[in-house]
Image 1 (cartoon, rainbow, N blue to C red):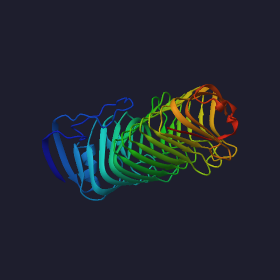
Image 2 (cartoon, rainbow, N blue to C red):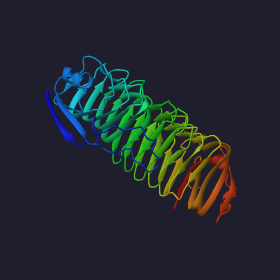
Image 3 (cartoon, helix red, strand yellow):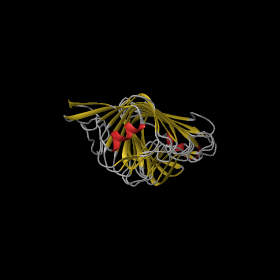
Image 4 (cartoon, one colour):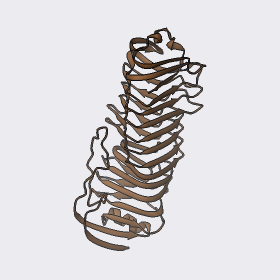
Length: 391
């Protein structure tokens, strides 16, 4: 075991950085952290016993893995310990075992291939802990279990899970700026059951998820979901891509594409209080042949704000684009070109330079107000199979 000690400033290094839980507003980035000068202890480990010691009994700030390692027991971090684990492109096979953090802290794991057969993945904490991955490749049942904590993905991430467990059970989920995240799972991708769950897709992040169930299952009260400028979020799911009891925000200049698997029936978005799609955004929903609707909401407002492209396509002759409670509205206040299709025919109606507010009850829409083109009042919205907006 090779040890070194030095003084200095280190970004995302355990003793130098302790991330405090933050509530980010749209446009902020979780990577905006401040590193403080501190004594930084570094150790290189090549065996599981050395790794266990560095995390449990001899807390070390930077743990550099120097060989492939296979776990033979759990690792229990008893107190607050905030290390950076540098994988150096080695493999950590946790098997049925887990790193269990008993106190809140921030752990950064970088450049690592990890495997796990355990039900809590490679890392567990029942505290409001923070886990930060940079360049992770993972296969197993579950990556991490932090129901009260946060997980952030930086760099390039590739994940494949094959169990009934979600990729991560977490309270705050962040895809860092310029990150590239790809995952495939046979269960929900992310389960967020505690109050105040949050999802941030930060600037220029690229996120691709394929799920046999839900992608973002935000069952906790008062959720927050936001994508930022330059981000690209693409999902394919059997169940809904996004479930939340709140309003989703798809930011200006962002790109979102949700696709329903051929076996899916539930639609793609449930957001109880509606959604906002920002200026110059690209927003695409492709339903499956069995999808009963694309967007379902309670009494709400769905706003498209001077967007670049909205393309909502049912692909089910008996399905619907919207299913909203009475008193809801679908509105776009900037001049747009609206193209509507029936269940079987695309582009059956087009209105240019239109501003409109459409009142909703169930699957039926009626005109609340409009500008520049009033022929929309003659369209039978119950037969709508596609809804498209362009500039």
